[in-house]
Image (tube, rainbow, N blue to C red; front, side, top):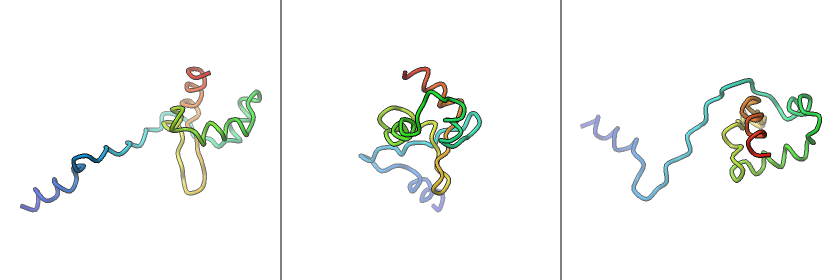
Length: 85
């Protein structure tokens, strides 16, 4: 009976959307300053605007938070830029 109870609690209730699964990190993580060093044609405000709107533009898969620090999967970001722009 204890096993049934554990199974019931792990399932999402009907009508509630499934939570987003955390994406896996495929490459090196870096800060906004790292992106700027590697891509001098981009501005800090442009990158921060993309990160702020990450759920609308699909960048959320490549952005990770560790406390207050925002880390970006560098390979994923480069692929996103090639695909989006």
